[in-house]
Image (cartoon, rainbow, N blue to C red; front, side, top):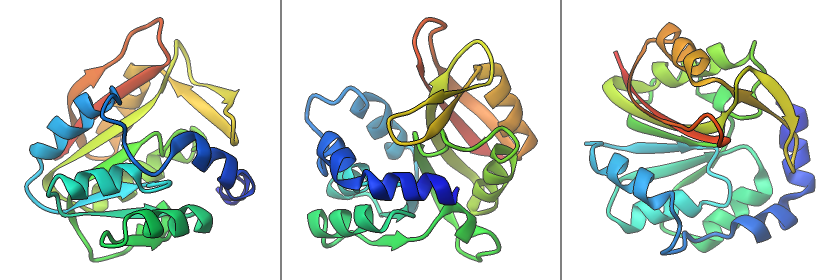
Length: 194
């Protein structure tokens, strides 16, 4: 993941300009993320928080949320845009072995750069920091097979929904909802820590 973090660091200014630090009222992802967050009774961790847009948005809606982001430039932007919201400069791997627990984890396009051999460990790490019964909402790029493609920042991967569901089950999750269309690249899955 060091190469991915470096790629984002190198392109941080350009990507931050594309993403912004606020969620637009017209953002269609609000229809997925906001209802999910309302089902979480407890603290939420936004893994791969980027510029802090979703962390800040959920905090403004009254949720107990913090961001986790490995790219230092993004953490600086997030803290500046949302000064009352906690952001950690850390990666998913830094959660391994922690005693901290969350009730919800938002992984909004933050697992897309993990190679197929890395994803199971990452999902197990996320399961390990979720309270039993806690909820994970993840978005990813779907496709007919697991395959790499060139994302604007670094190599990313497409996953068939069935393969991602299988990986989640193997990590100790029970999938409770999935949203995807075979002809569209964007997909979401909600899973409960079982």
